[in-house]
Amino acid sequence: MSTRTDSGGEDPIIESRDQMIALFEGGEKPPEKWKIGTEHEKFVYSKKDHHAPSYEEKGGIHTLLIGLTRYGWEPVFEGENIIALAGPDGTVSLEPAGQLELSGAPLDNLHQTCAETGRHLEQVKHVGDMLGLGFLGLGMWPDKTRAELPVMPKGRYGIMLNHMPRVGTMGLDMMLRTCTIQVNLDYCSEAKMAKMFRTSLALQPLATALFANSPFKEGKPNGFLSYRSHIWSDTDPARTGMLPFVFEDGFGYERYADYALDVPMYFVYRDGKYIDAAGQSFRDFLKGKLPALPGELPRESDWADHLSTAFPEVRLKSFMEMRGADGGPWNRICALPALWVGLLYDDTALNAAWDVVSNWTMEERQTLRDSVPKLALDAPIPGGRTLQDIAGEVLNIAQSGLSARARFNGSGDNETGYLDALHEVVSSGKVPAQRLLDHYHGAWNGDVSHVYEEMSF
Image (tube, rainbow, N blue to C red; front, side):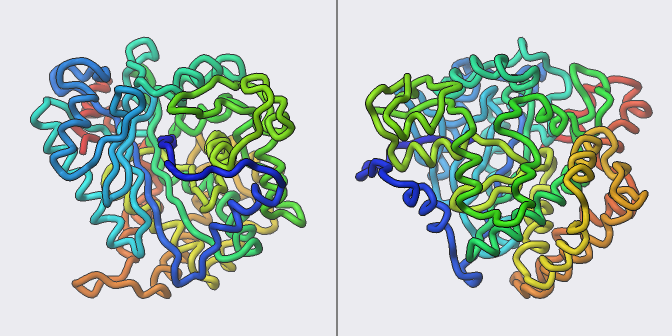
């Protein structure tokens, strides 16, 4: 989740709808300037007993952040607490229960993305070794109850933790017990954004299946392959889901702004503090009638903050976010941006990918989204087929898109190799969660603690 900092500059009051639309328009870039931003989260645990360390305990999360400053990271404070780190490789931040996230810098190619990932993981492993901490690449805590998990000292998290049980049964699980990999991509126009959004939203269940990596809950199989994805089905319906309007004629910046305006607020950030506005309306804010700040009008930063509190499978800000994948090991962190860059950043590949899904109805898309957390590649798609039947075709489209980009590393390799982990999933027919379940029912003899050896970075 986003880490808020004061800009230190003038923050204009929103006086017209055009200012809200301008945030999306301001994200437009010519294709030659498109970047790739990759975010990945991992669970932090004590190597001694596998407990999730608190922020304040000796050798805990605060100490971990301090340790990372040896690599040039600069602390970001909320009050007296360090809640993030900023540096050339982006931002290191904390999820609600201490999950550690790298929000990577915008980069030119996947070689740089994988190098950035490698630097970060080497740094956290080095500091973790000194503190007796390990880092786990999964989509959900395999063995922790909510009660066993700490809460980080970030103001927005307190507001969200209080609000979540009012609107769904699994919002606290989303905050405290999950990890994801996300990719942020650029667009050049409203029309291109709309086509990229539709294509990626329709194919997001395929990404969920390929990266499904959360089959355990509180020490036992949970009946799902991506329980993390299932959690979103009852987190907060007002700010999640497949967004049917995206597939309607005329979809663009204004329609997304209308959607965001109807998403209930969480907070307003003023003078370094979060003011609870949970459940209140941004439309009222625009009229100066927000109960949390009566008489005040929103600023452009408030709109940017509000956009970060909607959680659909694909999200629009001044860039597009792909949000469908479970957390996982190093090669899958590199594979997710490879998938989406290959499908969306080349026109021929984008057209081919849209052709795969363009005839699906909204009901069929929703059925797929609902079934994929449990069935993964066996989830049904139109025509009496399953995701497995199109997975290879979609990967080949992504591969062609990456080949067309012709971005080479020092050894002369293009970017297609980063898809290898996904090709292996498709050729075997087994997603990562199914392999973990095989271990659990086999060599692990029903002891899920072995996952710490298998899935740690």
